[in-house]
Amino acid sequence: MATTSTAQAEAKSSRNGAANSNDIEAQIAQLREDIASLAKTVAAVGNAKAEEVKGKARRAANEAADASISVVEAAREQAVSFERDLEKQIRTNPIQSVAIAAGIGFVFALLTRR
Image 1: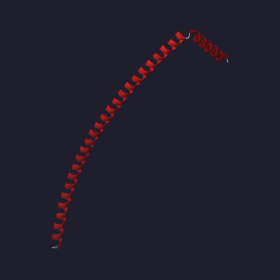
Image 2: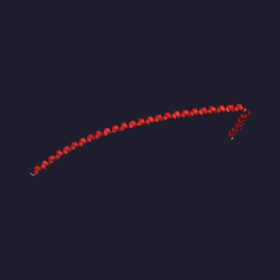
Image 3: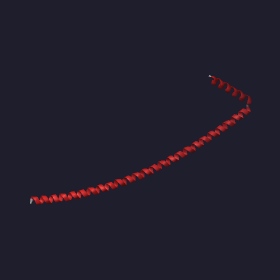
Image 4: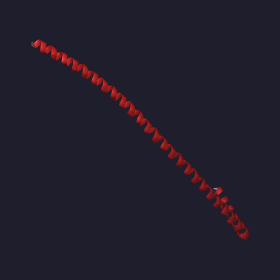
């Protein structure tokens, strides 16, 4: 009788082992599907963030370009204003202007000789 109960226990164990093996394989398959799904989700989130960052960078570049154009325009206007003021000063005091120009030329000549 001991052999019969041992045989029955071994048969149950064999069936439980096969059932456990099938359960493990099913769980592994489910884990693989979950990991694949998770990878797709992470990739989608990453792509969305990348597009968001690209958009922000594009806007920042456009704003920087607009700001630089504004600075260039302001500098040009200031240079034109300075030119007009200088021309007005020269027309108002021509002798003084010629003397200043001659003095600057003399100093420049001295500096370039050395």
